[in-house]
Image 1 (tube, rainbow, N blue to C red):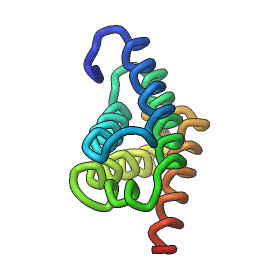
Image 2: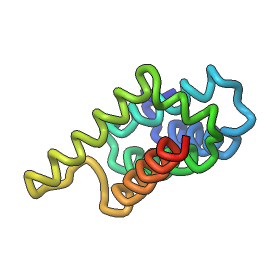
Image 3: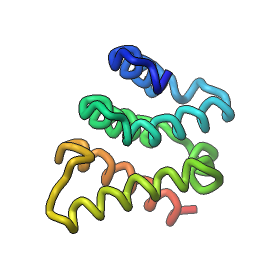
Length: 120
C-alpha cells in the first residue's frame, strides 16, 4: 500500500488504520506503525505531512502494551531515523522533510511516547 502510485490510496489506508488502531491485533499494530514511519520519506509532501498527523493519532490511541511496539524492533529505529533527519534539516536551516505543522505533530507524538515511558 505504501508504494501505491496513487497518494489517495495511501492516505485512505492510513486514515482507516489510525481510526481503528485500537481494534487491530498486535502484529498489525506493529505493521501500521512501521509503515507510517516509513511514509515520512514518501516522495509526495502531502503524504509525509498526513503521515505525521496519523502517527500522532496512532500514538494517542496506544495503550501501554502498544507503546512496547515502539521500544522494540524496527519501529523504534524508524522513529529515530525520522527524528534525526528532522533535526539535521533544522540544523541546516532548511526543512524539506515536513511542513511546520507536521513537525509539531511528530514532536507531540514524541513527547507522548517519552511521557508514557517515564510513567512505566
